Every structure is written in structure tokens, then in C-alpha cells.
Image 1 (tube, helix red, strand yellow):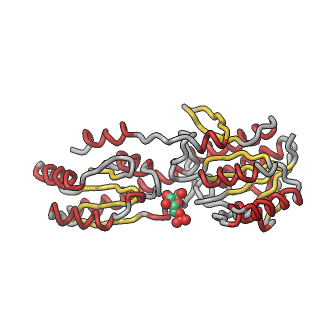
Image 2 (tube, protein in one colour):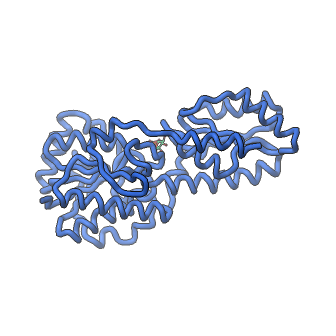
Image 3 (tube, protein in one colour):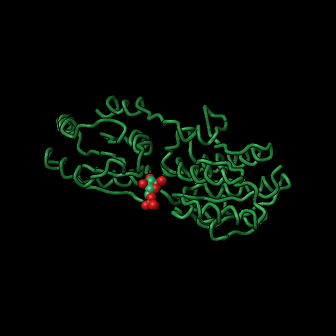
Length: 320
Ligand code: F6P
């Protein structure tokens, strides 16, 4: 039976991480365990930067973006020496279990420290929704709605000036944000790494639509594709339509989490503590068809994420 549960957030932050921290801390205490917050992810574990958390330490954070435990990407943790120091600190603070909130890199770290004898559970938290074993990652819905709000505003001015807007949204390796906000904001085209694209055809389509009276256009580009400025320049050159490029950037990682993210964080956080209470280790919490399940970390890391091609293909009917 676990006695002391360490909690950390690692990799890129995501709205809803605080709600997940709160859930893990409160569920741990409710089950009679001690909760220890580790600052700056695995780096804090190496530096022994941690403190016991009580129920009040997580008051008033459910609605806040970012992570009160801070986050980092630790190179030292990837070394044998770093892992040994981290394990020593776990022993020093009596930590026998860890709940690690983040993405694939976070889960790889959890796997490494679990080999030293620390029980680990991963909770998926990243705005990209790019973790293969789960349909949903904490932060995705908030990021979608942030990007949506920004694009709605861009469309007001794009419409007034009869321009084309190229908007780059986050997603280093994945186009899930792009395709969802593209459909939700009525984009002319969405460009992602998962699906082949042809800019010449896009320009042709825009010119045909212009002939039918369409006056303004929106192209959503996933960050992983890159070259948004070049894409904008190409479109302007080949259509003659004045084009502006906006890179939304880190604004998408901030802000108060939506209801969906808060509820998901609560569910996943409690589920993670239940797994530890039942003596399980090396598991990743995942949402599958609306239900929480869990996978072995190695199995989870070996999965491939599906891209919603069907959603992407709807654009050809919707953007006329
Ligand atoms: O993992 C989420 C994410 O926001 C990606 O979409 C993006 O490419 C990356 O993090 C940016 O990371 P950083 O904040 O280190 O620049």
C-alpha cells in the first residue's frame, strides 16, 4: 500500500494541470496518504525541491492556468546519475509513488524512475492532444477555445479588409488543434503534417470561391508544418489576395481551464490515486470512448495516435 505520493508536472504546461494537482492531493489525503508536491518536474526531484502539501495548499487553484508546481524539461534526469539522485531524494522524503502529469516525455521519465523502484502513474496533460493511448489530454479543450476566440477576432478584421488570414496554431507534431479550430471557425483550408496538402490547389479554390462572391479567407496551419510566413507569401502572390499571417503561440497554453478540462483533471487525478491505492504501478491514465482506463507505460508509449481524417475531409464540403 502506498504511503506517500509525490506529484509533479513536466514538459509544456497545460490549462487544467492545477485542477489535476488538486485532485491528486485531495484524493491522496482522503485515502489517508501523504501528498508531496515536487517543483519543476524531474529537475525538482533531482534537486530535492519538494514540500508536503495539505488540502489547503491546493485551495483556489482549480480555476487557474499554468501549474503551481512549475514545470521543466530536465536533461540530467535522462542520465543514470540523475535518476540515482532522484531515487535518493524519493527515499529521503519517504516518497514511494509518483503521479506524473504531462506528455510522452513525462511518461518516459516515469518509466525510468520506476525501474529504480518508485511506483509511477502518468496523467496525460498537454494542449496538443497528441498522446496515443488516450482520446483526450488535459488542456486540449481550453487551448481549442482560446485559439477559436483569437481566430474569431482575426476574422472580424479579415472580413472588413477582404483579406486572407493565415493563422498558425500550436501543435509541434500534431494537427489536432488545427483541424478542430479550422472546422469550428469555418476555415477555407487547414494544413497539418498528417495530411498532404497542395498550396497551388488551395489558391485555385480561393480564386474560384472569389468568383462566387467570397470576399475573405482563412487558412489554419499547424505549427509542425512550419513556414507560415512563406505560405502566406505564396498565397498572396498566386491569388493577388492581400494576406496577413498571425502566429498565435503561447497564448494557447494559458488561461483558465474550461469546464471540460477541470472535470477531466478531477476524474483522471482521482483515478490515478485509486490505481496506486490498489497497488498498481507503471500505468498511464487514459480516456477511451468516454471511460477512464489505464495502460502499461511501455504499451502506451508504443501506440500510434489516429488523426481525424474524417473531420479534415469535411472541410471540402463546408468551405465552398
Ligand atoms: O507541447 C505543447 C506545446 O505547446 C507544443 O504545441 C509546442 O510546440 C511546444 O509545446 C512549445 O514548447 P516551448 O514552450 O518549450 O516553446
